[in-house]
Amino acid sequence: MKKLILSLLASLMLASGAQAAGGGVAWDKFPTERVTDVAALQRGAKLFVNYCLNCHAAAFMRYNRMRDIGLTDEQIKDNLLFAADKVGDTMKVSLDPKDAKEWFGGVPPDLTLIARSRSAPGQGTGADYVYTYLRTYYRDDTKATGWNNLAFPSVGMPHAMWELQGQQRAVFAEEKDPHDATKTVHVFKNFEPITAGTMSATEYNEAVADLVAFLQWMGEPNQGGRVRLGVWVLLFLAVFTVIAWRLNAAFWKDVK
Image 1 (cartoon, one colour):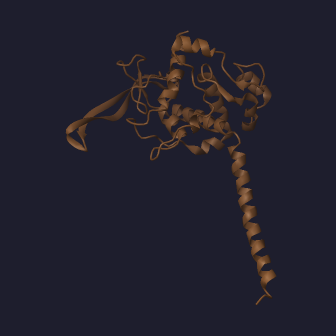
Image 2: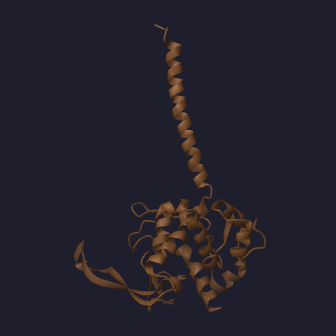
Image 3: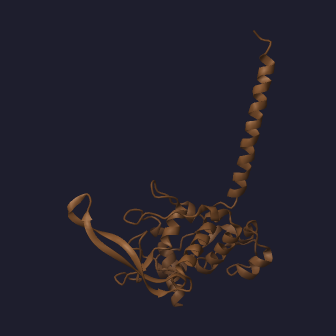
């Protein structure tokens, strides 16, 4: 029950967390090649179902669409179908929106388009934000949840995946403001481990990359097919342009 409450609190704050651009660290670059890595997408789907789908829905996504990342209906049923009865169902949650609003003051946001719904000039894409966000949580006893985040300072969402990453504290230093020598700024230096998680730092970063890859793919499952079709269209237009140019030359060669 305690984990459920924390997860619900986390989900309620994810949408508001995605609105906070200023004041955070620069976003890390999400490894975009993972969006075309079927194995990574399958691992990301597993993480999503286990750590996100308890409270967050992905109502515009059907379970059977995961056939596109190499999963059979049987694999989906056995490993991913916890909140629905059929593989043709959409990825909804059993949490009643009315109950969520009454208990926690808001409904957990849908995550179907979360990795595509945010970008910032000079910062990066929504995938970059989520990738950074899920990796920069740290313990902060001054906050009600006991957690804070570098990508979204004073975040209200606790760390839903802390058991995988472990716990860490952020080290800050006071330095002179480069724009005003009479002021000081709080500058992040590094993280210090508190307790180890079930994954090493490298393994956790890889897991987050897989999860974000799945979120990115889920926002547009047909992206790969669209890109492939676009390449063939461009090739056709290139060949047709050559043919049209030669036909034009042939039609007008006797015209003076």
